Length: 140
Ligand code: CO
Image (cartoon, rainbow, N blue to C red; front, side):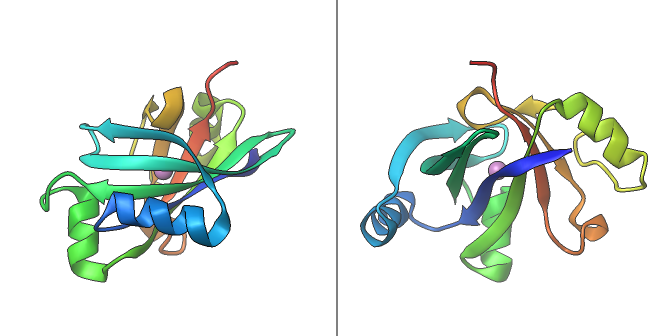
């Protein structure tokens, strides 16, 4: 069902500084920088690699305000890994199958993610403490 690691989401205080770090330390390139008002973040996708199943990224997340999910995460835990995003071929099918196993779905229905993807989050308490995201890449 999971086709790849689509991205690792990392919470940070300063998006530009963190982009510069990932560029200089790892040679990654910026694929997109977007504001997602619905999630209260400004985010950058840095391309890591391509595979037959699709690309993989580092996703850097800077909160738009303190009273957002990533803002509260930073206040509580500081900078670091925020979530893991797995690629799926069909997110609606995957959500139904995973939900049927008893994992609670934060998003019952997919919503808009980075670069035109459809995404949905699973409850971290049911995934060993890991906030988990499913990602269906847009058709190319
Ligand atoms: Co994500």
